[in-house]
Amino acid sequence: MASVTSVAFTALGQLSYERKVNVPPTRSLASNFEGFRFRSSVLWHCTGVRASNSASRMVIQCMCAATGVPTVSETKLNFLKAYKKPIPSIYNTVLQELIVQQHLMRYKRTYCYDAMFALGFVTVYDRLMEGYPSDEDREIIFQAYIKALNEDPEQYRIDAQKLEEWARAQNASSLVEFSSREGEIERILKDIAERASNGSFSYSRFFAIGMFRLLELANATEPTVLEKLCTALNINKRSVDRDLDVYRNLLSKLLQAKELLKEYVEREKKKRDERAESQKANEAITKCVGEYQYVCQ
Image 1 (tube, rainbow, N blue to C red):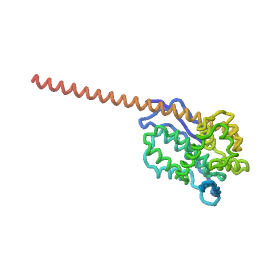
Image 2 (tube, helix red, strand yellow):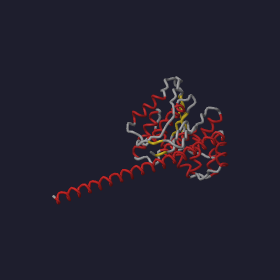
Image 3 (cartoon, one colour):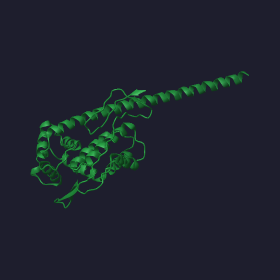
Image 4 (spheres, one colour):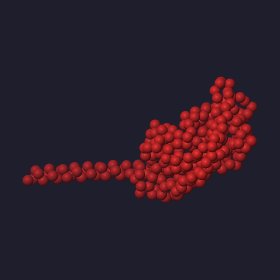
């Protein structure tokens, strides 16, 4: 029986990492996560719209209408109903913990969707699902996951792509000087900075990862640039540093788990092939013995 690394994705903040975990033929990874029930009964919603020069409009969604908030169990059930195929355990374990944590973020009173949050989640999801057996299923799972949270998966992808394309055209200086320029992405960032300054912004770990993704694409990952970007966005750098350390650590653990799982699968395949060859050899010997006995009669 193989041993692999166990990875738990608890709010991108607590890593459950045990060096030795027995992996059965189903290739499962242990998960010690217990779900939470979110008891608030108020969902807040408000919408702000800003027009751009190109007549496109960016919608910022927060919550403001009293309504029933779904439980964690209901969100998870919606996901399972939308995607009914079995998911390999190394992916499913993390996805199930991730959707619980994102449910809690999603239904916080101060939650407000923005493009940076979307970029952070898309980055986490795509790196988590690297190597998934089917590219088509990987995207279907993404759609089911976001819809289970009553959000728009297409909007996540579109906003993340816009930020990525913008970041690729930036450098260390222009990235942090967005407030002095006009443009769709600049308006998004200025709106975030404004909300962060007046206390209406709800920071999350996905937001921190979205920030780091911008720095990666702009080839500006120096700590000083991150500090300047945090200042420009009115975000606490200490929180960002903490969450990015956890994120990097998680990616490292996840990579180790996938490598060990790959080795396990290859060993099992080799054993099956060896057993098949041995069976063929035994059948050939039996046949030869039978023919020899027939000739000798």
